[in-house]
Length: 346
Image (cartoon, rainbow, N blue to C red; front, side, top):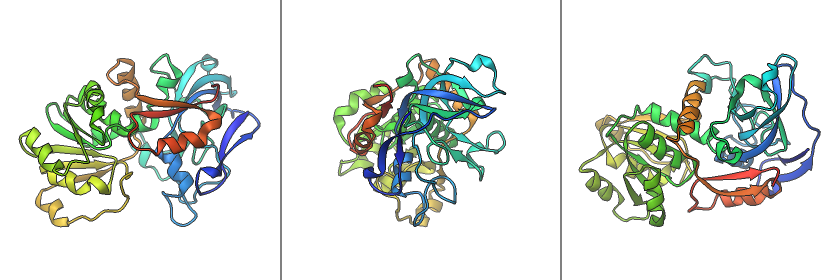
């Protein structure tokens, strides 16, 4: 089969297109013919070594074993099953839950042995992938490409909204609202949980699209009076912030929060280190959450919301598998709207 492998830590020249044997499913696994694989920050930061110290990166302390096939947002068709798998799985169109874990229900994502497809296991930048049958779910939409854009970013966004316990009519600020996680934060907070969402983008030409996704108001992070604009529109400080930007908007986020407000982060595209005046934290009684991925229960709830059209796919562009380098470079450009998807058969 054709696959793209990461050969080590570095730039996109560490991505190579290779030929590999088609993997064989073990007793409890299935072989999936990959139809689409969306790109996430996770596989780019894994390649760049951004998650670890020195020469270690990935989701486990020991780091990634190279060469590794990245990719975690995967849809495809089951074409072969292990001996212990229900024969009804054959020919099913599935979306893959992206990690294994021995954690108990509701804590799968924080278990010490959580292992991620595309980091600890070979992932979806390939024509075929093997995965445990119990972690393959029916696609929520008929389109492989559209169903592939939710797994990691969607579950992360869903878990973020659950963390802050969003309620109807609360005002929630979403940073990076035109990105993969951000655009889903907007939809989930507004269309599933009923909150009023203020979307932060760079280019205000995206305003109409953001409002179509559910945002009540749209602002640009380029504004010289961003905090004042947010507070003025809301008629006072806001309830919560869902952040994927990090340092660049951290001070503003805390400034616009009400006393007792909540701040939840799952990304740091605008800077991984920041300054925090602890007096702001305790004098305003702010609760802070770190968040990534989520639980199987949340994944199932997300798939149900997608199937019921409460959450819609937002896709900026697709690339053929062989153009993975170009796709990852494009992914890092600002101003996109939604997800970038690799298509092995294109």
